[in-house]
Length: 378
Image (cartoon, rainbow, N blue to C red; front, top):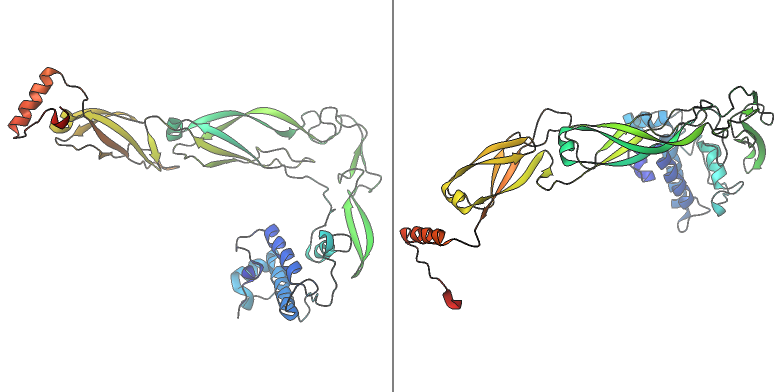
């Protein structure tokens, strides 16, 4: 029977590498026979099963093969997924689970067998800058028709004085003497599996592999400096509140000459006093007199696209809705438009003139309606 490795680790099929690694760490700590409580054989089975799942899902090529063929149809390298034959059998190994990863602990062993560099690791070379977020408010009408928004943003940018290399222009740049230009220091240590080599970032050059005769006077050798700058972004017609616009390369500058991250702009649409938007449809209310409602009329109706004439049929009741087609918001990245929905509110006057009262009384008499003035409180 094909095994569902995603289910075994308790992750979604779209889980990223970090989520898969975190799930395996949790399962390994929970089910290792030296750590688990209760049925040791069942714990050992689940430990091996979790390890098998991670060996596949933690490897990009094996995971792609598994997603396409499943565990039954894929070949994972001659029994690597069979932990009774050539795989990682940890059942006889005593792990140190205390402290979350001290020297020789579970964290070190995990990194040794499943990749990563623990607390150290080589970081020499360009590093991509961080992604950043911003939030802007857009007026209701501008969100309908589109606009160009402008705002100020504080972010780390590449130092213009040294062009991001951290050295004062004209000063000598040499290989780091401590690490020999490699950017890392290698050490050996004894573990339960024997002698292991461990690499860490060189403390002298910070992994750069280079030292400067003189650091940049503007950025103090970091290659980046924080500045405020005006940002312009095009707001497309039909954008809705909550939308996110991504500007590639507009995030923070990368370290060591690395590429900049991205800027994610969250859109908030300011409400309108006259209109309400639901998707591509726009709603509004229009008051008319009871005479207009009774006799019918043609009125000027305001929409976001300008005034239009709206015919009110005789006998229109209050709260009746009328649809004006194609007078709503455009659909994002499309020529299609929604509709404008008008709710008619019939107003009843609170006070009448003598003449108006006489006319209405005559109308009531004509219709056979007897009006009793005053009532029990009159």
